[in-house]
Structures are given as C-alpha cells and as structure tokens.
Length: 261
Image (cartoon, rainbow, N blue to C red; front, side, top):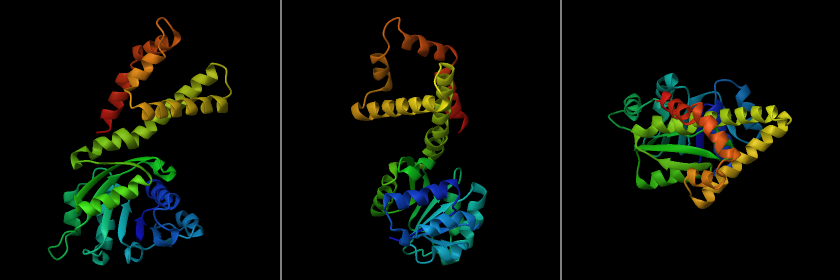
C-alpha cells in the first residue's frame, strides 16, 4: 500500500513517524507533503518521499491522509480535488470540527462523491505507537473500514464511532493527553517539594502512572476497585484522596473535559 500524508505538523508528522515505526508501510511507499522544506528533511533521510506540492504527493497513492488546521481543510482538499482518484483512493481527513457533509460538498466532482472517506482523530502518542484513535467511516465498505482500522491499530488502539462522538473523543483522548501530562507535571513538582530531585520525581511519577495503566489493563477492574486495595482505613492514601477531592479534583477533570466540547 502506498500512503500520502499531507501536512507534517505535530499530528501529521507524528502519524508519519508512527507509520514508519510500525512497519505498516515501507518508508519507500510513504510520501509526506509540507509547504516548508525544513519539516521534510528528517523524513527524506529516513527514505520517505517528500514533496512541497500536495498535487504531486497524492498521485499514485492508495490512501491520502490530510492533516491540516480546520480552516485549511477546504482549500487543501480543493487543491487536490482534480487529481484524486475517485475510484480507488481512500481519503482520511484529520481535523477537529470539520464535518463529513462539508468534505463531500467540497470534493463533489461530476456528481460523484468519494467512495471511501474517513474522518479520524488520533493523538500525538501515535508516534510511539500508543495513540487512542477515533475513526468515523463516512463513505466506506466493510473491507475498507477494516483495512483502515488495522492501520491505526498498528499505532495504538482504534475505536470506530459515530460522527456525533468525534468531538467528545477529541477532548477525552487528544486533549486528554495534555490533561494527563499536566497531572504528571503537578505530581512531579509535588515530589520535589517532598524532597526528591526533579528528574527522580518525574521518573517516579511516570513509573507510577505506567503501573496504574498496566494494572487496569491486566485485570479489567474499575479504577475504584484498585484504589480500594491501597486505601487503608485512616491511612495516608485516603487522606490524600480526600484532600484532592476537597480541592475539586474529580469535578475539575470533568469540567475540563466538557469545556472542550
């Protein structure tokens, strides 16, 4: 399979590196397009084909992935419209807040719509093969859905959702990555206040968060069941949890998530 990635910014660049690391596609079968040459240099050194012209990049690709800011989706799609292969190419658009209806309107050509259109929202952990990706098939066959899902699963986990849930997925998993990192930063700063050196405090928190994730993945328990195992009556853990709740911890997390909708 030959894949073209348009846009080598944070998200597009992370996905392109994820594709290379996952070996889902050979570097020689991957094309990355970006208006600035600087962001293409590392990809060229890795054996990836690079272009500054989107039209050149998409020709001959089996799959075209578009990673641009929401307000650039329309001009970018219209710029490649005449060279898109409406019979064979799969198009994946990664841009928050852009609807499939609009994409189809922008790409309507000779009364034809793209037979294989997806919208997707991964997060930047895709570069480390650890993304949580939400996938919306707008026009696609079961075989195409499975093919695209397999690709994203090679770079993390994928959930096929209705279009109405795409914004919720964005705030929960893409914005959520930043929220998780903010907790890690806060806990690491607390570790310094407790007496650890900054780098040691960061590593302690990272390993602790990693342990929490692996425990939950291993046994499938609700987080509260694991919390109960370490909250001795009258002990330190329950005191700390209650102090966090007095400060509005759970409410602040939920309000932060809802603010992204």
